[in-house]
Image 1 (cartoon, rainbow, N blue to C red):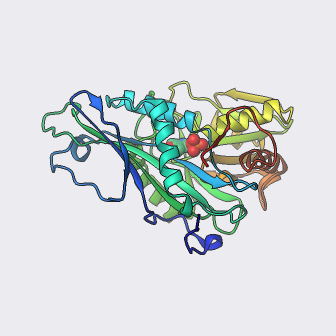
Image 2 (image 1 turned 90 degrees about the horizontal axis):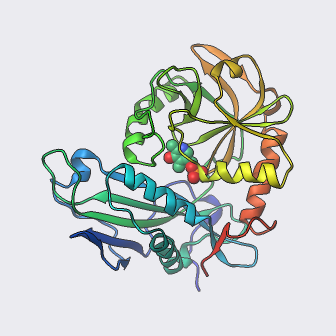
Length: 345
Ligand SMILES: *Cc1c(COP(=O)(O)O)cnc(C)c1O
């Protein structure tokens, strides 16, 4: 198969249309068969539910080329499951999990020419999404939906490697406490844009949200989970008692790698922000599909800056090891647990 003529090493993290998307419609209580399309636009009624009451959710994963030339993706079954739980919370029909994985395989295979070659640092970003197409004017769930998957080749999320970033505690609460922060949906992102722009204006790369009930505990940033390393080398993973941290697949994979492959101690528990300010942690990182781990140099809260001594100028040793092991599993260099790598073609 002939690859597209792209400058693979210099792709940015921006949308670029490819040959095919996947589309499947829901109406009259059932999903259609669904399939590939070359139409990359969506036409909907001005009264479609998505435009008024924001019934929409999405997923994000990546497909890439391994050393032996296969095209694979990482744990798509977990994306399928998480999307189904987002759909459930938004009263949208669940897209069957096996159909989801099959759709990912179909659309990636059809766009094989757009999958960046091994070693380029780039990946094919896969974005499944679902939205209400049915018309609603009174507040209620719509009766028709569209599930789509678009794919687009992207470069590394952070250009220039893994330089630690500075983040701040958000003055604003997350949009959706009590179990709606754990759905992957545009509505949560819409509400995070204002605080994000404020943080940028003040010179920070990201916002860290505290629990909105007591503003005591660490939750996550707008689009990534948080990890800490304490002085004894334990990986400390914030847990939400209001179920408002998005269950990151990267975080769950890193926790598994830490415990079962690196022999590390992992402590998943509510983490008070005061522990950060007390200097209890030596490293901090943000994790998600796009960057795997991005190291955090400092967190500022109300003008008070806390730095992480072991990861300030460059990524700290524990985060480096964790990131390296997971990326080696993803690239097929190191054998990971059964089923983590899903071969497409
Ligand atoms: C997608 C997302 C993450 C990261 O999840 P991954 O499955 O690791 O990509 C973290 N937080 C939020 C709010 C997200 O939307």
